[in-house]
Every structure is written in structure tokens, then in C-alpha cells.
Image (cartoon, rainbow, N blue to C red; front, side, top):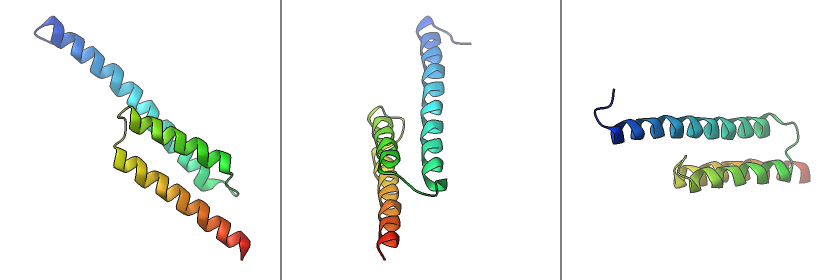
Length: 87
């Protein structure tokens, strides 16, 4: 139990933010799993995932460097698939 009204408010805000952050991270994980498990990755899927990653980084849900790492891995896997098709 919080000792002051302001501490109580901060506790409520923290719970709300944590729930929102958790749902955003779950959404990101789901998007990335769908792309990894898809037999054929489309540019639209990758673009949507990168957009979601950027939004999460912008709002502070994930760190900027973590977002860049995730995007690089997505792009690398997409490039690998394109080179397999061309050869």
C-alpha cells in the first residue's frame, strides 16, 4: 500500500504502462514468429513488422539498439531468401 496519494497514482500508472508494454512486446513476438514460420515472406509482412518495431522503440517499449538489431535480422533473412530464389 502506498503511503501518499501521489505514490498510489504512480503505482497505478506503472501497472497500466506495464500491461501496455507487455501487449506491445507480445505483438512484436507474434509478428516475428509469423514471418519466420511463413513458407514465403512477403515485403508487406516485413514492412509491417519493421513499422511495429520502430513504433515500439519510439515509445520506449524496447531499446533503440534492440529495435535496430531486430530490423537487421529481419532484413538479413529477407535478403537470404531472395538470393536463394535467384540462384
